[in-house]
Image 1 (cartoon, rainbow, N blue to C red):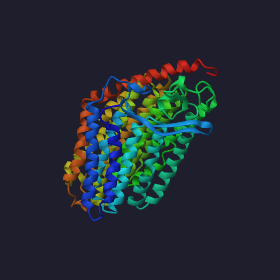
Image 2: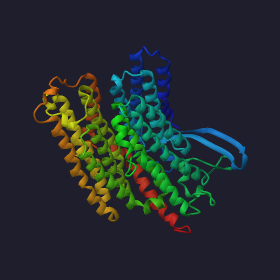
Image 3: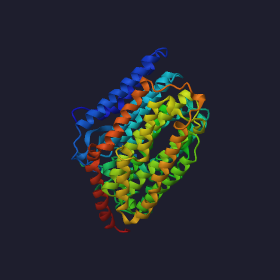
Image 4: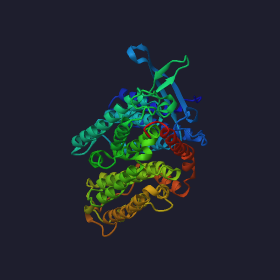
Length: 534
């Protein structure tokens, strides 16, 4: 237990902000906005303090003693309840090198999205209250180490995102919100069923020697803590473990979104207001890949190894299919949405390598994609606010009237393409190096490199259509960036350039945990193979 409960502060501070926002009169629009800005700004400060006090040498993954800023106490405890015996659910939070970068990403993207929300004028109290509730859900997912607590935070995001799209979105907002809700709810059902099975397959010993069922994720990773007769016990291997892995993976894959579960994403992005698109692409998509790394891989390591080729296959499909779809779009925002599908494929490919370089590239790609794609959606939002159209063929020569804005666009586009010295390059390079080193997925990796060429094609084509060439006189009165928009873009540009030039701090942050996970999966495979049935 750290002397300061940093993780509880950064997770539940938005709830306090939400209460204040709801208590303010709706006529106090500026106060509502400044409270939200203050809360998200404090979160960035807390995230910076966490990074400053982070011990890079601890691995985390499956040992409680290796997690940092841990807070653990009994939350729900019922004694002698029917045949179940004692029911014990802990408030158990902590971070390691896999969750720490995403905690920092969430704080940064949420703060930027708050600035982007400054022009929201419809039902302000409701918008910012739901915005802050969503913030708590996102933070909670990345710090929870109890599966029950994780699931609560996971579900907590569903309600505010549904309303933020359905009320403040575009013309087809109801359709997009319902589609998002149904897809995500389907994934949540899969996760819930597996969570229950794991609960009845895992026990831990209390101080008095009593054995109780547990939702503790780390206990679920420990073979010695499993019940021999458990539903999903590694001591009693059967096809249920395989089915559970597929169900859990599918639940997380919907959130990524992985092909063929991707169809909700373009609709949600196109209809969502710009700040919510920023959060959706910058943070929410990462929760799917994070869930696979945090839960699926270490709890089912033997199945992870068996299915690594298929994970790489879907990663390749995401990369190529997403890029081809992006190239076919006329809607600027939908193009960026499909580019997210493509770039999340790199994360899957790196994870499938099951080696340090590939998984490090995958985690870094999650962070880098979060900052780059947030910037891309802000770019679309700036242009849409001025022109009220996203049709790329309706533009031309925008750079003449908005040179500074076009410079920002160039940085974001080339970062997305993977230009050396910008952050997108180093993470994609690590993914390909790690994946190419594995014979099993080498051919898929080679095919996936076509995504780089396709990404350059649709990004440069968009740059040419919208910003270069002869000025369309229809947009002769366009104004360049204002002070608020500078405040949105400058932090993201600095992060993209800094990580592109000097990625070591971020790689060092995750290195120990990634090494621990790679070794854990390799060692666990040997142990699991010793049981009957493998």
